[in-house]
Length: 271
Image (cartoon, rainbow, N blue to C red):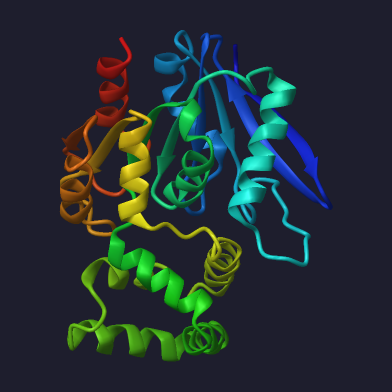
């Protein structure tokens, strides 16, 4: 089945998503920053026979719009997927979760609350622990949030600050590389702010998360790029390898989703 664009209304907000495939198994997918669920269409020919893929657009991406006064939460993530599952007919069925980069934050929120229904949890180039701490600081800490808003309005100062903090080794290279991509692009910087701020309540205790994954015997798959400078793979490799039912795949790629290497990985995993 070719990819179909759909949307649902959630409270006062709109959530858009993309569906493709005719497979009996379900995969819920979460894209990376500045992408949309449509990005997963690159793997359609590989996944469509085994899976029905539901690729959700996060807020500020695709046509999803968050209009609520309160912060987006784990409960909202789960209620949205439950509503989509009810519409698409898989609410009582086991399913797999796949995420790329930023999407891991939403994916973990879903896995935490539906652990008993998760088959595979696939992470493609997930953010590092340092990056998660940095995001939490800039959106949940009053000082970090004030600094974020200041730099949003004075991007020239951001460029100088990022360079200095990296030089004195306060800011690690992954955060420096990511931040440098948006310095000087006001529209994209605002999108970073809106995206990060709307995710700020989606936090994970990684030790408890690992225990939950092991308890429910979830198959964890980590796929990382050997040349990825934005999300260096080593810390997450060490973390995932401690899980009981996990596999790690290191591909010859950078921080990118749609690559031939990733397509070949999916083909070999789900052949």
